Image 1 (tube, helix red, strand yellow):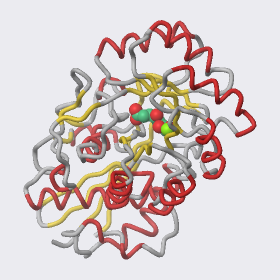
Image 2 (cartoon, protein in one colour; image 1 turned 120 degrees about the vertical axis):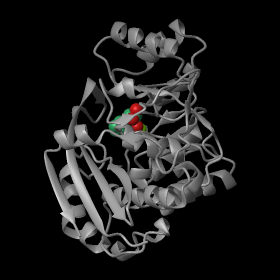
Image 3 (cartoon, protein in one colour; image 1 turned 90 degrees about the vertical axis):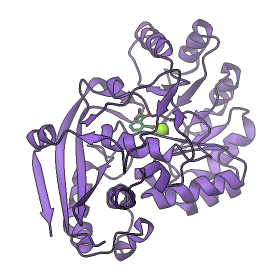
Image 4 (cartoon, helix red, strand yellow; image 1 turned 60 degrees about the horizontal axis):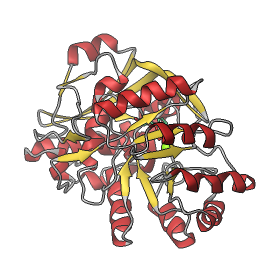
Length: 367
Ligand code: OSB
Ligand code: MG
């Protein structure tokens, strides 16, 4: 099965609410959707790059450039039966994992459809339902934060992740802990601290958090190890882990005890699985992170999260947590803290093609 055609589209999609993290914020997502065509079948994916480089150096614009000028032209005529090898012709392209992942992940969807099996099954996923949590952005006041957290707890999310930054941390989290004593909380700092904040960081241990995500710089493996040595709360790395080599370094140094796997951040499912396998052998848990995806990226994430090592709830929330209306049907829903893994062929959800076409602001086609 050879790739005959590739179509890249950009669609704007407005989040219901501004999402603020320590390093930036966003409401208007510029989503890149990729479709690979082969033998009457289609494989779909979403590139998770954001509008600005505040989370990663990649942006919607750099991903568009890499995909259209360097990566997609190389893909036409390539064998698509073994998606883990799909990126071999573009090994020479350094970095840009999000752009590369879009191609690889569309390839997995295509290969799963060709076999008539679900993406979850193709990835050797084992679960029919995956535990899911929700990620709550920074809020100007505790009152707003409490209202939102209360709502999510009522909806049944299995854990609640709170975005933090210096000035919105210990006291804010202590208030939540007091009001919601039984909720599984974790905090995500998106690199807002440094080791000079060690006294402050030690205070997190009193809050009963399941983990603290990416407290220090994305490039700082050594300081994360020094921090983990001095605090009880498990450190989870997100931004730092972009490859199997990054994970090896983190495990060697003791920089973390948990990893958030985002398939876009690490360059696709092959690397995601390798990270999952290594962590599992080390007896350490992983969970699936999110990048405010539409239903297309969400379908990929939920399939990945069905692998056995994803034992902690993912940032895989219901479509309605993000959008007035998603671009897939059925929309993703949660109940009792879990989400059902689609069982149909490939990503297992239908695309709203008319809506996607009418939302498209630019399109590039390769054949
Ligand atoms: O750090 O996990 C993060 C969203 C954009 C960029 C970075 C992060 C996030 C989230 C949102 O936390 C998770 C989701 O998609 O629900
Ligand atoms: Mg994070």
